[in-house]
Image (cartoon, rainbow, N blue to C red):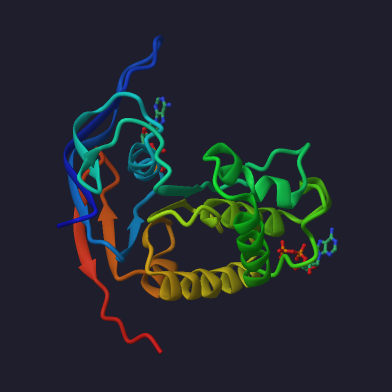
Length: 227
Ligand code: ADP
Ligand code: ADP
């Protein structure tokens, strides 16, 4: 059975002083355990809305959305989320930021620290744990955000254009790191991007959304010949 199951999902934003927007219109999607799905489409087609709903960050919507057989009704410890902009707390060091999920979920601190250092090594942040976010480049902050999303070993990783703000070279490096993390950890990943090449490089399956009103146009299975 699918790990992520979406059926008849409709989301209408109703701002108080303007006309409502249909962000998602009767969308269906299922994601198998261990799959890497890229969600692509032009700006405004509802990608972020879909990801936020999967992350449990949208309180109201119509339709069925479940994760591991349970309806999504709020943020879950089974999920790690990375947004386009780094969202590190400025008054905490890089290591203290990465450790947040361990504290919030009251997991073992020693094991968490080991894992934090291992993750920082993986993404090229070894030795930067004691720095503060503003002392690091945007790319490095984004990498720290990825470590934070992975520290509690969530089943599902949701990423919203995580490398959108990076220069081309860093972006390529991060794509390769992300692919390595995915290949070795067996996580289920939903990755929002507007880059078709990026989607084709990373994903098993590319879900293409139409400009509006928030429908899925087609689902493409990428022929994988991973090394
Ligand atoms: P994408 O991530 O593909 O750019 P979004 O999910 O951000 O698309 O947005 C889908 C549509 O919903 C857009 O028309 C956007 O303007 C609208 N929208 C998104 N968030 C809000 C909000 N908080 N209030 C009102 N409209 C919104
Ligand atoms: P990114 O491409 O990740 O945005 P930059 O291009 O700004 O990073 O920097 C490239 C490299 O320079 C980084 O990977 C890091 O090794 C080093 N670097 C960047 N900022 C700092 C800093 N504040 N202190 C030490 N080294 C840094």
